[in-house]
Structure formats: structure tokens, C-alpha cells
Length: 321
Image (cartoon, rainbow, N blue to C red; front, side, top):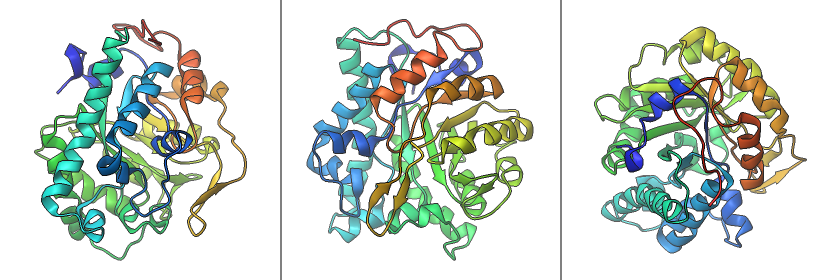
């Protein structure tokens, strides 16, 4: 389901470079919202959906073309621990996509006319655990068990009509295999994005093997990395292009380090938009930021990418309302 008669995201990637948004959590936190509990930004789907829509709109205003929904940590199991029924959890998952659509409508009303898309975030199993496991993987579950965990949520999100499913921050090739099985037959394209350290997944598998899992999966329109250090991106892009031949998605975090025990970021930002042209030239077609990269950082990505990247066919003709 493409937003407002925009071209499909796959067609846009064939034509040039598309800019993703930045971190949802840091944008909500900067607006004064407390994200300290286990549901993280997903809590605001129930309590302050207007704030989620405002965060999407801030990124569209900064020049992003794709809004990634606030469903990363939204799971039936996670909501269930808070006493939320499966029916209500399904409503909140679908609402995350509708809030992205609402932000597109508000962007249109504000005069933004370029193509815009909504990506439904599907975080890894470890995100539900809320203990930093998404940066380790190796949960002790089989591929079949992980597929059964992911499929019901994927069905709800796909049914809500996003333009693409963002299978993101995946730390483990086994979980990627489960997700790739779970997206079959849903009728919505997907991108697959690993969390990495150096040339390995967070679980320690070579990226060549991890990317190869998606090479022949028709549903996957892009592969790449996110929520990694900016310094790990270039090598990953080159590997993904070589192994899969697909467009590459990259959205690193700021380079700061997440302390799962303290639930806080430490260190300093290393996100430099001067690196963006190198990523694009190596084959990245979906480029944005993850944790701790806000609208200012995304505006820098837009400036680095320019109007059309390495192709033609559509133009980022109105970056701001």
C-alpha cells in the first residue's frame, strides 16, 4: 500500500536514494516523554499517540522520506506483561502504522509534496526481553520458535497497510532466517537490517553468510545494517552489495554506546554526514539514522544525498513544509 500515489519504495530505490528518519526514542525523549520502562517508545502508542505522530512529522519536516513506526518494542508478549489483552495489543500495533499515515497526511497539509512512505518496524525477539539481548542474539530458541514468535505480529502489521516491513536491528542470522520465513505470503515487501559489530553480526556470524540468507528472497527489497557504529557501515554496504546485489539500507546510531543496565547512552556522537556520500557510492539506497540521530542529523543526510542520489525518476522537491 503506497502512500498518496507515491511510487513503490522498490521503484524509488531503483531510481535513486531515499532518506529514512532518525531515532524515534530520542525524538520522543527530547519532547519530554519518559521512556524508562520496558515498553520504551511503544508505551506511547497507548498513552500519547499524538506524540508519536508529532515525532514522525518532525522527521518529514527535516527531509526524511520514510517514517519508521513506533512498533519496534511492541509485541503481544510485552504488552501482555503490562496487562494489555491480545486484542488491544493488535489494535496498538495497527495504530502504529496509522500514526505514520496520519503524519503523511499532516505533511501533505503542510505543503510537503515529495513521495513519502511508512515502514512498519519489527524489532528482534531480544527487544521484547528489554535486557539488551538485541545486541547479543543467541536466545536459545530454534528458528521455528522464533518464526512462531514473529509471525502473529507481522500479520497484524502487514494487515495495517504499511509500504514496507522493517525487519530491523536483527542480531543473529538464525533470527533473520526465522523472519524471512515469517514474511512469506504477507503481500508486503520488507527490508532486512542487521545490528553488527565490525564484519560480524552481534551473534558473531560473518556478514557474508548473514546477507546471503536474503539474496534470493523476493519479498526483500533491501538488506543492510542499523543501530551500529557509523564506522561499521562502509564495510557492511560493500559486503551486502557483493553478496546480494540488492539495494542496501543503512541507518547507524550516533556512535554512542547503550548501557542496558543503566538504560542510558554513554560516550559521544560519531555520526558524521560527511560519510553519507561514501555509503551511497558503495550501494546504499536507503540512508538514515537510528538511536541518538535526530532531525538535525537527518537534515544533514538530506543535504549530503542531494535531490536524486545516483539515478533519476523522482525528486525530493520539497524537503521542508
